[in-house]
Structures are given as C-alpha cells and as structure tokens.
Image 1 (cartoon, one colour):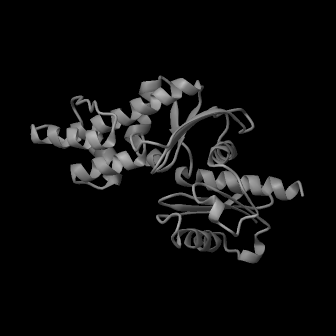
Image 2 (tube, rainbow, N blue to C red):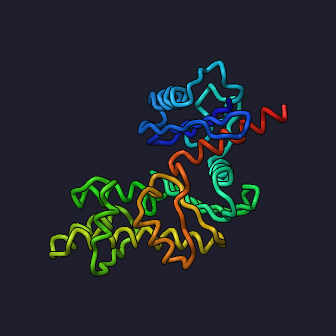
Length: 258
C-alpha cells in the first residue's frame, strides 16, 4: 500500500493506492494542522481499506502541514499533488480549479498530470471556502445548504465587494433592505465564481476543467463556473481528497523507482 496525506489548516485527508494503481480508500477529517486530524484520517482510511500500518510501503505528505508530519518519507507541494490526483482519477483534464478553506488555486496541467502553469490566492479569504462559510453564517444556514438555497434564486443581486469583511457588511445591508436570502446566496456564489474566473484567465485555462476542494461539492458554484468560463466544468471524484490521492500516486511512483 502507498499512502498520501494531505494536511490542511482546517482538515486532514488520507488516501491509499495499492500496487495495481487502484484507489482502495480515502478519508476526510475536519481537523487540520496542530490537531489529531492526521492520525484520525489515517486510522479511518486503514479501516476502509482493511489493512494495517505494516502494509504501507511509502508515504508522501502534502498540504499546509506537510513539513511537520514526521511519518512521511517525503513531502510534495499541494499544487503538484492536486494535478497528479486529478490525472489519476480523470482523463483529458487540462485545468484544475481547487477551492479550499483558506486558499484557491488554478492549475494548468498536461496529459500526464504535470504542472504547466498555476496561479494561487492565499492572502485573502475572498475566493475561498472561508468566504462561503461567512456568507452561510450571515444567511443563517449551513454551508452545505448554500447550493440549494442559491438554486431557488429568481433575480441577480450582485455582491460588489471583493473583500470578505466588506462583503459580509454588504450582504447584511442587502438583507436589511428586503432582499431574499436565496438571491443573496446566489450573489455570493457569483462573486466567488468571477474571482476564480479572473484567476483562470491569468493562467490560461483549457478544457476539460475539473474542480477540487470542498467547494466542488457545491453544485451551484460548479454550474455557474461553467457558465462564466463558457466551458465544461465538472467536480472531480472525491474532490476533498484529490490532493491526498495525488500524494499516494507519487508515493507509488517513488517506491517503484527505488
């Protein structure tokens, strides 16, 4: 077995690939760096695969907390691991949009999953899962309910602020003025989509476009992203665990190269 660990600021993911290059399990735990999250993610994926630690031949760690995960044989950046993970799971993808809790990335890849170009937003919460968490809190719903809420929208209410703090104030003001929650929810989705589309234009995107990260579970954003870019945009399988899957694929390659 070959293990990939993706340790983020707010969640930990683990994936196992066997010697036939088959994904045998992946797990996601909503606890990140500095917590017991990595250990829990590892225990969960071992349980799913029905194997033990003794069966792991090589481990690659990625993500924000990769450098402090001491049980890995090597560390690889999340940019490379997301590219590799998408290439492992899907055919003909040339652009990856990864929207995580604290940052967002657009990665252009080749047919072998190698990174050709990328752009990353890590200095502002706008365009990340954190932005949607704030919007969900203001709208009084769970983040998993935002997509369904936005699907009910009948009119466009633009959210003009690109800063999460200012956008929160703008949303509160819109609601106080009588705007419907569903219309404001869609406005927040459009705001994040336009920000990511700008990153896509900078990196030079090509179809097929796959979305990874927790935000890829939001069907409304995936659809709006496709409409904004004028291209087919699909959510990758196991979107939250793609980085860990890519790390496991790298682990397999490294072991076979000796």
